[in-house]
Length: 282
Image 1 (tube, rainbow, N blue to C red):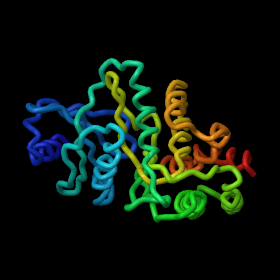
Image 2 (cartoon, rainbow, N blue to C red):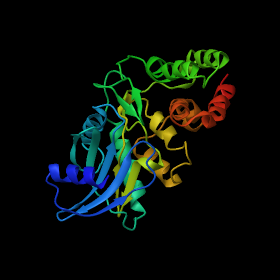
Image 3 (spheres, rainbow, N blue to C red):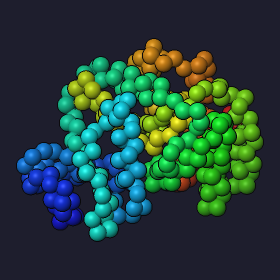
């Protein structure tokens, strides 16, 4: 492992390595804090992903960084069979309370970026799952055809869902427009949970995006999936870019997609949460 890390850092002229420290917690990629003679970096590596995996992440970070802060990308590419992405190291220094305000304002600013359709110019990944972003005029059509039903079909094929589940999902998708209010397409982070932002001092940084133009309540619902962000985050966001009334009640509908993603990536332990949503909105 150390040899390939040395090859990556050396090939990018990022200095002579002084220390390498594994960063725990990554479920898809290997992560390392690398300190060299000229800087400190976060290195992500994977030899099991498609060739464009980190190219897509690089492009996505560049887009988000126009409107919200991200770590600077130092390098990305492939050596032998190992794909890699090198980011500037964001030191976990003592966090000022205003950092969560910065994250909320940054997300509000990101969501102000709009298009005439839902989707994106390129397809990407959420975790290790391929994510199609074909353009659609309607949010409910996009959410149904390019998010929910493809993973429902895959779930049936992989015996993670039953035929009855498929029928329930299809019936629910047909009624999405009853609950989901119309909004302009908003530029989304796409996977904004606790593990995909960093706070350092008074600043926030977004990482690991799965971007597309969608309904902004998707990002808000994701912040609630594994324990909500601090209450202050939602207060500040709403002061900057108010959500439509009833957004709290709609959260489970927007969590269907990330729950389906987790069902495929991590197994049947996520099935009960999915089934609860199906029962709640049947």
